[in-house]
Image (cartoon, rainbow over all chains, first blue to last red):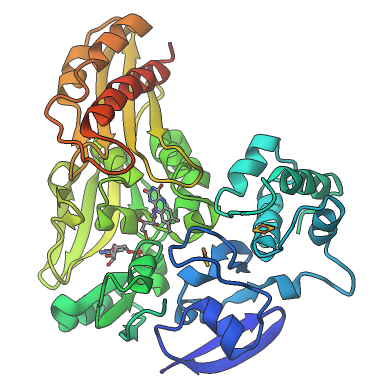
Length: 155
Length: 285
Ligand SMILES: Cc1cc2nc3c(=O)[nH]c(=O)nc-3n(C[C@H](O)[C@H](O)[C@H](O)COP(=O)(O)OP(=O)(O)OC[C@H]3O[C@@H](n4cnc5c(N)ncnc54)[C@H](O)[C@@H]3O)c2cc1C
Ligand code: FES
Ligand code: FES
């Protein structure tokens, strides 16, 4: 067992974990943050995307021990009393159907807009290429990202 | 799936990392960004008994100006390669190719050293460091040594690194402003690996190609220099026709794999077409 200290959604957690524990399993099963889903076994789908020290990562492809000392933001930490502007844009543009990919899409979008506050349509599609959606055909997702960008989201 | 059990250490110096790796023998593995290793562990295609995490070794991170070379730490991420001003100025090919690797989240974690040590024939950066005439810098129990890119890639997923050796950095000769470059990657879906990739560098002088270097991705079990193209292009006119003619020999001496993305003949065709495009873009015509 290895000792880790991680800040998740603003709260500091200190735990003993097995080195093989994946960050996504730590989030879901150890600290109960089930807002981050797991969609694949191959690091392809992006459903599990969270921010680690401000950058998007696939939490199924990071060991919890590798997150020691870092600051993690999940979909559960994004809203601040009311919906985060990216969440609101997804809601308003109907950018989801089943919603399974949505936590990852929204986290990847916040990262994309931090890097590039005014992306073109092509940059949006490239920026979200690590996130797969089985339902929407992506059109409304791209619209939602544009809307969030127009609303001036940079964090 | 959940990976099989392993022990884990996170050393705080390269020396400690080498000792831990050597002490673990055949069953010890380095983990850098984990973007190739963790998918293998999750699918239980690899069973290391010890992971030596080099994630704490900040001295392996970043780019330094070293006179006529750049020294790039093995832990430098793909994201850093894309955004580092020294890389953009002196070996833009590396930044361009790193920007085609996987997707943003993978690029935040995955490292140059990991890509090179993993030596996947479909990986984009091995052919690029080969075309750049880069040198790999390794440290092991017997001390440090340098390995030219041309001798580094030995076979499918196999490099010249000895057990217990860690890749610490990569030395890349700076390219002057007279060099143009292009990485042409052909794949069918977002975030996918290259079916074939071509890394081209062209130095132009007086409307001619003074020198060309071409590295091929996924045209064999290791990245390959397209020697026939380099010879044909040297001295040729910098025109689309002449460059396409030079590119006609791109598949010479290659042994492209057959898989569900394409048969060897198809890959040969792609290598010729993509080499033509890459040379034209690199020559700015
Ligand atoms: C969904 C997905 C898509 C991808 N698509 C592409 C793509 O299109 N093109 C592409 O090129 N790559 C792609 N990759 C792989 C990606 O580039 C990885 O980041 C890279 O191959 C490995 O870097 P890493 O730091 O994550 O290495 P790790 O996964 O940590 O390690 C990989 C291997 O290298 C060894 N190693 C790592 N660092 C060192 C070192 N310093 N010294 C000695 N040995 C070392 C490890 O022991 C291990 O065997 C993809 C990955 C994923 C998950
Ligand atoms: S669960 Fe699919 S990428 Fe992480
Ligand atoms: S809304 Fe169902 S997978 Fe995207």
